[in-house]
Length: 592
Image 1 (cartoon, rainbow, N blue to C red):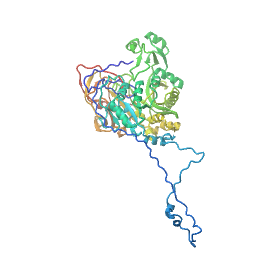
Image 2 (cartoon, helix red, strand yellow):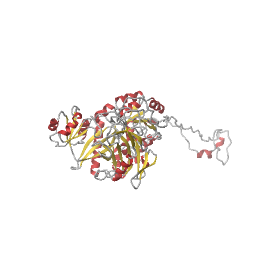
Image 3 (tube, one colour):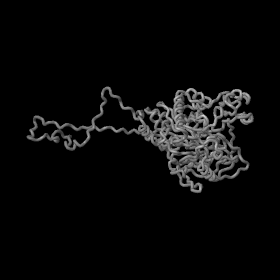
């Protein structure tokens, strides 16, 4: 397991040290107090739609014939005026629609209450969330993973620890810093937020029956959410932990017919024993422990020297996944398993281990989404495997959003299951902003639908066919930029979140503030989300920010292209820091 060092507290403005790398978009902060500006957000007031239109009784009466005592009108029609005192002129009556009193005939069904109406197809689903009155809150370090979801779902808000927008995002609430123990994980951050008075007051003002969604949470988070009278719209933490186990993932894949890289699962006690159990896997091995994030617990072993370097993180860690090392390309695909079936997003390429972005070998640091990622055969294979895996996950009791990493063997062309992330991830903002999402709905909307309890009918096969169409996939890329030097200082200057422009000479300038990715007009513009700000520690592995732009950041041989390097150099150059004496010890845990 990765060591978790912590940063010493130096001032009230010191940030929280964060884990260096994860398959979610990770952001890092020092492990002490941090100065944050309070985000000015509007408190959502849940209003119950109770007004029901009642049809007015139409009382138009037929003009009655004159009684026997009335004189005949010779050669003329009986006038409606003479019928009764309440009768309106016949000419005016003819122009008005006549509303009949509703009656329930024998054998007919009562109309369902609005909340229980069966949603049939995409139009109903989109309209349902457009009118949503249930408060839904994404509680996390930042709002990056579900960026833009507030524009699809009425009453969707963000409660975050870091104020990436300097108080300018209308739906982000960041409470004032309160005393807390040093954070060791993102779960700790969420648990801190769920006990913060300002957060509880804000949630309470939103209305009854608020729902919470998270990037990461544990059983303590569930207890605190329940105490705050919030339902967690994700599978139970205990179940998520079980399927998140890399050893269990292999076994779920085996049940689903989704193969993993040739491997053995075994406890490892020594280098000699490792060689004995892996004799059929070749000289070069890759070892993974049950839990870990983006390179932190992945070990490349070819010699006994390699083994000794990591033996404390291998021996005594339970079953280890020992794999044959292959010449592979990483890919990611997100999906959502629902009662109607598994909805599958597009296959994305992954930026992995680039030293310009991350100090971690094998560490995830970004994604690309474009219509020609890999061959059509590989894309189709990935979609089929993901659908099968999602169907098996549902049999295991899991439902909702998940992500799979696939490894494509460049020598054999075979595709293997890499790992499962039973949650939203750092790639989720890419999936949920793709062209197909705007044509139908973001993938995460189906996760919310699954947990809403509202009955729905959906043609998943037709939806998956549309989402597989290259015409529904546009080209975007993102990278997560970490501090890659083996140094620690305090940030004195940091770029603000917003839109940046690349000039013809490759220099980068701030253009304007925005929190919409769609505001990026061309490949010469990018949306930058600042993570580390002034007063925060900058140490090896600390996340500085996330950049999203149109087009690709890698070449066809999976190397960073020139444009990507210009963006990296330009944005990194906008961070300035001053040294510390003495320098604190850097920490490592997940923020985003």
